[in-house]
Image (cartoon, rainbow, N blue to C red; front, side, top):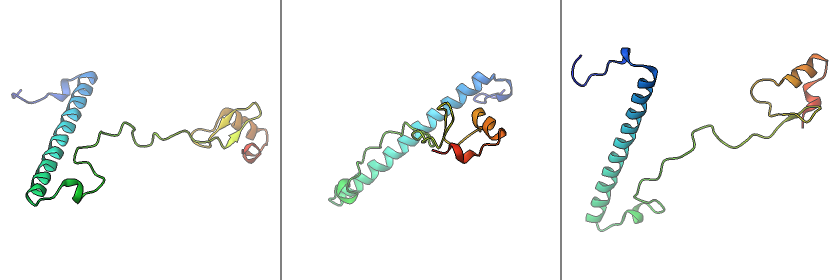
Length: 115
């Protein structure tokens, strides 16, 4: 095998996962470095014109903002839309709960349990 090449075929799942995580960390590191270089260049050019970064772009710090800790789609809880006879709740999302499936099999309407 050539020097610097990675043999993906012979790597275990754990090794592939570690490689992926290391590559993502390196990608983010390089992205932050590029962002900082661009901001430094912009600040330098603005200083040559006698302007401050904050004057040109009010309310924005020239420092990179910390990365968001939440992933997309991980918002707050959704309110329940259905309540069962024993107090069970269902948001109306995801798989139909067993209690509601059983009630519909007995002839009840789903709307009878709407909150």
